[in-house]
Length: 590
Image (cartoon, rainbow, N blue to C red; front, side, top):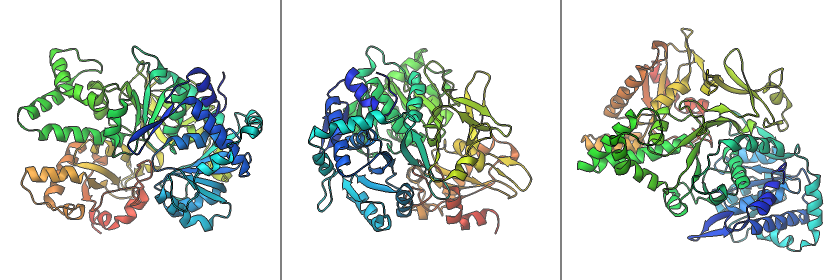
């Protein structure tokens, strides 16, 4: 069957890939599997229940979960096939953002996973006149449970009404409004149609590598990124079109345990996760001491000096693989075909390390407004340091100032209730302005160099691209986060949030007393001096005008909750500068 609308994916899966574990969620220590038939039946039941609640095509329903689970998938399917619109919301955003999103979208009903999110929604409930009810997926005393909606739809006598509504839905109808996390200002509601996301699935399909020895329908994907993010959500649908089984991880903390249980073939990741995985591996390798540590460091040297990527070929590469890197793969379940990385730039050095350890990483690029993939590497065409070839159904035009602009069927319809911002987002000839600076090389690979709005000019008139410098700096084990500043100033400087865990271990090895808490450690002259050495190494790779001349250490760990990071872990530059204005002024002698 032809997939034109997002809910067609589930009925297509039932026809082509019926299986016992279409989805699996861990509950009370056990993986609860949902078959393809069960999923479609529950989705239909949920649709009937929503109709009993009075839901009509175009109505907005919010979905908020701390961790993705099968109930989210059922609700999404049930909402979409009757023409209603899903509004997925990040669980970690502020109550003020919840209030804005609910009122802006005119949310009628909301489904949340747990008591913490229920409390958060209840805080703003009286301020949202459109909100008629809130349901929970967990069993919570005194709260309405989503089972009540399923119970309303238990009688299948009204299924013909669901089917009639389903048939009437066009591929060009709005499917979802996804509110961008926003580094500044209020969130913007990105309107995506069924066709926007389906076109992106179709364009991305050929980039997913085949598994040796068995078919896609036997594959398992472990999903742990928030499904409210379009990156994970598009792949969630793509996996279904290929017949994958999708297992939902319990949490970041349980990832290691879940990976061993599921032994996934595919996972989507963000660079920060890979950085943390590598740091943990490195710390364990060097702290093992004696011969084991020497073998580990030797293997890392072999890895980093290996030319090209692919299977080990020399004797030293084969030995290093057997002694060290095989264990890395086993730590990821032993059956990983590829990790798909997006959301932010991945360090080329780290990418090389994982590739040479036999863990392929496909780095891609996109935005919520582009559904999201614009370009992505593949096994056939891969160049580390780039985000691969653009998808075949996406047109790219590099503007005179270097901005990447795109056109195609996966480009969004506009920002909800915001015509002026929508107009500003497109060129006169209809290309969407990504806000990113980049170029396409002679072999067709797209390379991103910076965010247009984040580039700044020093008082000497020189332009500085902070992201390039920050990505170089984060390769250091001492640096967890860094923000390069200097707009209108005589020189670039940086506020650094050290990896305080690594710094503590370093201090213990060298018998240094640098304190125990981030606040204490940030005041350590020894730690600051050591990080300045790391900055010195980075500066050698930079032009004189873009070298970091001074640093200050953040006394806190940057987080979403603290307001320094967006839900997609991007820096909130304005908020960080305001919060640490004393550190900023100290670097510039004020």
